[in-house]
Image (tube, rainbow over all chains, first blue to last red; front, top):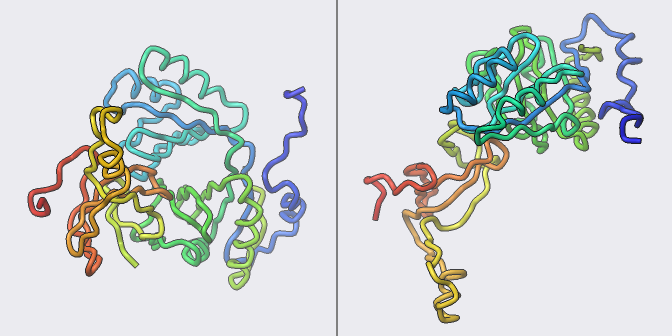
Length: 202
Length: 94
């Protein structure tokens, strides 16, 4: 039965939770997986007042119109992916997607559940920018990549969405599920020189 | 390596983009009425310009949007970037 399958996060086989218990407080950064997020790709016309207010009502966030920015309510984040495309990210169990789908049923818009397509690897700490810069052409300097900015690019040749969540700095790196283990191994290698601790982000 | 100014995302590395061939090729209105030669001309024949060339690109690793670009094929200088469906800006129109 579809509803009783053994649900595992993309990096479950790496047993990161067990490793998180051995955290090293001297590490230059921490890395962990934030799994089981609800994600929806939303397509629509930002100029349509019904669409914009539906997103606002359901998520509590204004639609980010500025390219490569994020609007977050603390609980839900809305990431700009394109001029008519956004990614809504919410914790496990959220019903934001179906509610938004219902609110948009009379207009030209689409809400697609993509929750299982990507997992999130969280990089936090003073060397997080250095690690990202090793595999990506984007400028991750604090001057040009700031809080609630996002970007789609490649990290070690793997397609990712990077979202800076805080000034720590803390980055959410969205990676396709089948690439997650490969990216994690690359990140471990890239982070080795700074020392890293495995975290268990919620 | 080129730096390409995506009309949506801004300046990004060339590696994030894919090339889509010559821009402003118009599909014939009535393909069934065309001769084989005319259809082949539309499908396959492209100019091989040295110098300014109007072409299509897609920001495949970024916002995944198509756009047009005027690029000098001799020195790789990007002269203009403009949206799909737009005519080339005056300074790069032939």
